[in-house]
Image (cartoon, rainbow, N blue to C red; front, side, top):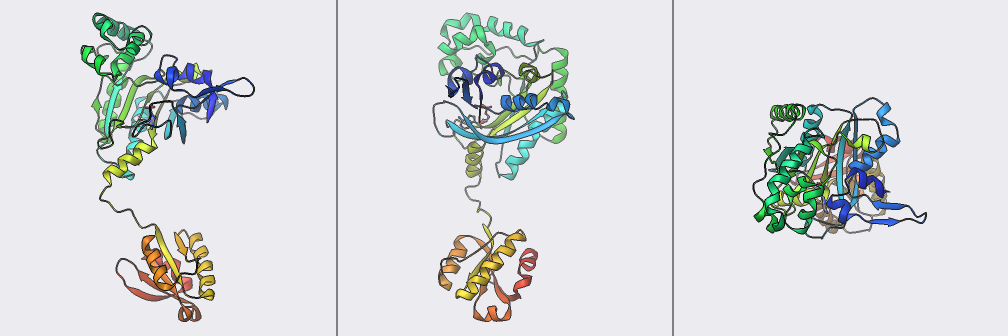
Length: 376
Ligand code: AMP
């Protein structure tokens, strides 16, 4: 949940918004400077190095999920504590790793019912070709320097790539169409990007090349990408990531390439809700056991537990409601089936099973109930 502040300063980069103004940093009782994690990649890489994963079979494929903290201006879709799930492939330099990392969250989005995700893709080069591109950007922006916003003025010297994704209106208006990096990429970065595009094409993953996509973290090399969706307001990125070939070494490990992705859970939920406005959720319960009388309730209790052990979602009445109230409750809980146990059923070792969608009813032996519900 928290790390030494230095990890983020070195890993994420001291000129990034996250490190400059968004970290919750404080001293612990031992006087150590610590920070609530604003992101998960630097901590994952720290753990990779600390636990000697570089000496184990590579690539290491890691995932995480949990809360992250950024002192940002809260608004819809942007919170100071939010949750991410993310994954990292560490120890694979080839574009197959990038392609898999880009494609996998798309499966998760699909499973969540999030539609029309746009994949924005870019390459920001490596230490061989990035410096020349930085210079080209400085040349392009020099004539408009006095019209840039305050943060961009300071970025101009320290991190000119960040000029590309400034959101301020005054900057957007002043900035000339920037030169793209593609003419500047070294042969290796260029070949990597071309191969990645071919692999994504093979997977049928559509993407938009967005030369302004530099992302707010300094550790990226080569590939950067982001997922955007409509219908959730201005904070429309539900995830993003990229390649970070220098980060393991920066964190004290052996030179090891890596690529990863992080997705925002709250924004995924917003996107799923926006897409699912008229879709009913699936039934919450497989079976609700309606019982009439104390002896039947005890039986219901026993059956609920054995059916849960069989992997079904089952509940029963534990507050002594009458038949009608139990049926209404089962309906509200969207139970797919109701199993009724009255005196008759109790004596016969059976239950009356009602299919809540068709209203059909039949008597079944209690011992057969789980198997029967599964089959239905
Ligand atoms: P980042 O690495 O900053 O691009 O973050 C990855 C994803 O986490 C973003 O695409 C968002 O979905 C989510 N995210 C980032 N910051 C916040 C925030 N303050 N509140 C909610 N979600 C966020």
